[in-house]
Image 1 (cartoon, rainbow, N blue to C red):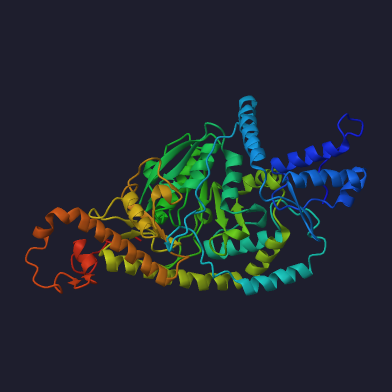
Image 2 (tube, rainbow, N blue to C red; image 1 turned 180 degrees about the horizontal axis):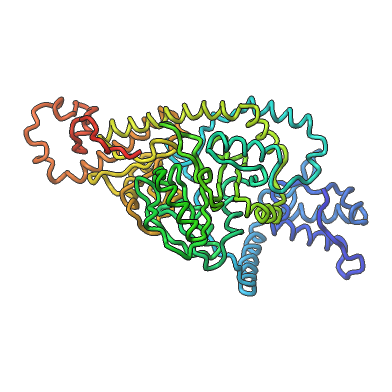
Length: 541
């Protein structure tokens, strides 16, 4: 290891002092971290063209003052505990330097905020959205395909590839979309990206400028809203209902771009009806607007056949299709794709080349083989069945503890939305009650969604992801929430306890045993009626 040190052989200060001062500065500024090894004295003397004694004397002084530690037979290392007076001086200098740098720095043109994709909490039962099952990654098949790709790698690791993505992968994606989503597309229209967020960036780079009007669903995906805002766009929120985005509420003109999630509206889970899909495309043609169709979790359909994607119905060349493998395989791969209309293909490839010159060859080659071999289709069938069982488990647990719950997003995806009954706490309060029980459920604003401050679902809906939890965790999580709600109900009803429970004859009748609440006590406290057949329309799909 070589250290960035330069000595002035003609300077007034001795070489030993110069060496000492530069080492000390590197340690205090954090360039040499605690525990890091320093070069052997002989190697450093050769690097700097000085005598070894000069280096040894400098090292001895640094050791004596506590900056370095000499370990017998292993070498010399930066001390883990630096002199306290030096650390205090370093902090004072660092604070002053940072302030002065900010004061004289050039203002940063970029304005933006990051979306919530990582949940910092480590909870016993976390219904965070968009997480694939951690045990479902096809590790055996993936390892075999990696070894196969490495065997034929040749010069592929040392050469730049096509910035738009490996040709084999783009061909495989085009074939997959034709069969699965009804989209007729050529490989030249496919751009491989590092997940859907980069695809959004690429589309915005092509079409959004400061002052551009961009329409989005309300509520919508937080990462999309924040991204468009960072480009200086004016966001136009459009309400959604059980049939998806309300086309009648779209602006009549002046919109450059519309962002939608038609297959499984994020976060409410509604599916855009076929009639509205046709009308939406006609609207885009009349307005001269492009549509970004984010198909983030359309691989998971549990009831009936999926509707043809907007891009598959598009006869005007106005739909930009956004897909990802982050939900079906894993976000750690960082592989997604953008499908652009032919008129945008050249500009999109150029923008992609300017952005990053493409992605690692190995992951793309393996992904292409994974799709072409049929392994991807088999993997999807397996985890679709798994996630369907977990969705059923969650629905049953909610009904068992809270009665005829109103849910949306059941037909597809990896999460559902729970529309809270009036006798339950508001979404933000219910989230806090659950968190106190080590359970994560999420109101719209905290679940990577954006509701423009308020929408029809802001206060009375929470979202629950189920794909990464096993059935035992799902059952336990909902039971904990029910207990928390029951305790809140008891606390609120305390002044009326005598009146509320007047006429109770036995501990069995009121659901209590000698040791406290029994199995029926929670439901009784929440004042749920006995289980009845669900009325038509009580569950939104």
